[in-house]
Length: 100
Image (cartoon, rainbow, N blue to C red):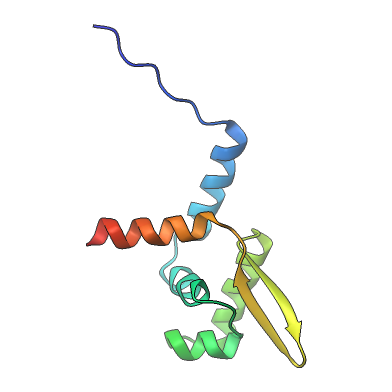
């Protein structure tokens, strides 16, 4: 019996997916993107929602910005963050569905 042909994913897509999965492979980062999934939020709002120190939230956001998972925009004296990587929503939905 002949084995079915493997569907190959383009190397560039695999590389990007691995980068996203690696970056989201931290419970605190998953909590942060879950907050941001509802819309924009400041570091203080995120910190209040998930209960970790503001400095840690900022560090995680900086790493995720560097990976183009989140973006920031200045709003007066505030900086508001949002998810810009569509795969994040798929990852969160997968976690929710697989955990149910």
